[in-house]
View 1 (cartoon, rainbow, N blue to C red):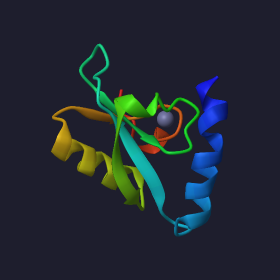
View 2 (view 1 turned 135 degrees about the horizontal axis):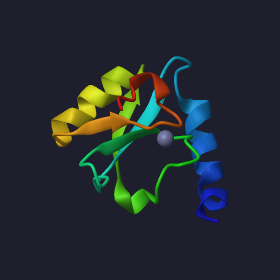
View 3 (view 1 turned 120 degrees about the vertical axis):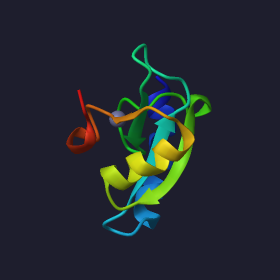
View 4 (view 1 turned 120 degrees about the horizontal axis):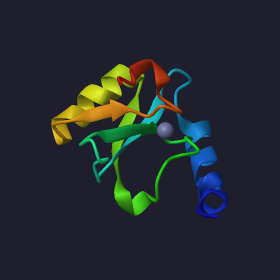
Length: 88
Ligand SMILES: [Zn+2]
């Protein structure tokens, strides 16, 4: 499982980040509905790192979505790690 391989990297990131900030990624490949999904770095559903773009350490999901929106026209929060910013 790739998640076991990457887990230590994510935990290192966690210890370095400011308490209120989270690191966000956006999927480079769109979903079938055209959405590019935004994830936090510790999301269990984060895809392989070759298929995601790092957005930076961001204080909340909505700011992360705005940043992702500069890269992709259609973005959406992950239903698992960014529930507050997910739109159906
Ligand atoms: Zn996620």
